[in-house]
Image (cartoon, rainbow over all chains, first blue to last red):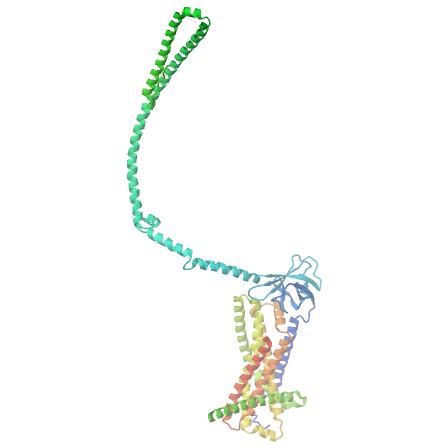
Length: 331
Length: 264
């Protein structure tokens, strides 16, 4: 070696390199041992088989958590003969106390991040879960419903798009409303909006004015009618009115009818007499003169009665405006 | 036509040169490893060279590099942890940090640091020895240059890269724990779980292999490039430049290969 050896000798070269080498070896060995420990090479585990309908998102080494803390991990997974997935979970013996006979295991998937196997124990006082036990893994997947949801949302969005499109009914309605409200700002306000133009509104206003005038004149007419009615009332129902007189006439008719009945009774008696008289005609003949005298008297009475009735009817006709030609005649 | 022929000849020659250099480098690496495996290759002289190499490559830069690596690691850990928290993926922050720093970034940065500091020096030294005819002189004096000069540097370089990677990685893990869990020890089981998840046997073996390959590259390429320097003084800087570029290329190739092996 005839190289220039001008570099000064290094102090404690062996020691320094030794320290570096030893620390490197220690670090490397410690690192390897720690990673072995971390992988569970030095602690005993018990296995738990979870049976799931499907294991999408599950991978070897995936942790199983209890209350958010990992207490085990997936060691092996295989598809069973029945088409179900069998996941073998290795649980360190010291963490197995969290699992009981009644523990429930769920596989949860979220939109972001991987799936999660969770253990739930309702009662920690139950019997501990036996090593090598098999349980069903309940899968709940929020993402599975998303396609259906999206399909529905799409339909809704399409409807909304149709509703909000340029040619949509809503837009047309809004345009119409705008049209109407625009007209409402005109001289005749809402009426113009409703009727469609100022001319028509003007016509309505004119019609209303006419109706007002008409009502005013009708008011006058009704006042007059009122007066007429009051007069009619006093004439018809008042003292000395038509009704009063009619009442009196009816009383008279009653009296006349009573007279007529009396006369007819007498006629009845007369006819009875006539019958008995016809029995012994001679006797009758004898008394004809007297009977004839009686008959004359009767005839006078009946005529008198009929005359009274006629008079009454005439009287009534005079007072009753809707009179007919009525006359009672005697045969 | 002559131009096309000339073009092809030039391209072909350039390719052959590159091919030859890479082939020589690989052959040299093979010979160096074979020599290192033979117990008879080691004597006090060899050991001294190895120790010196380790001293210059690892020990001297240890404080500065460790500080730099700690700073870089801490900043990256904070970025990952904060970003993961923002996206609600804090569960994965530690794992991402470990994979990013310990598996990928720190070995590569260590190799690059060693390359910049020691590989350039080795390349210059060997190139100058070659230009000055020292190599030939040693060989004519029946000195086994491979055993006494090159192999110890390769061994020293590899050990240095391994040592620096180990120190910075462990430091990064401690920093990651502190950044994620804070100053307390109750979360050690959780940390261990993530550790166990990330560092399985294949990954551990992968880190070791990658670090060794990086160590081999940062020493073999500059030595091979220095040995290939034509005996002209002005070629020394060119030799160093070429060696550094090839080394960088080789390091990136190793990193990409390891990534592809791991994730594809």
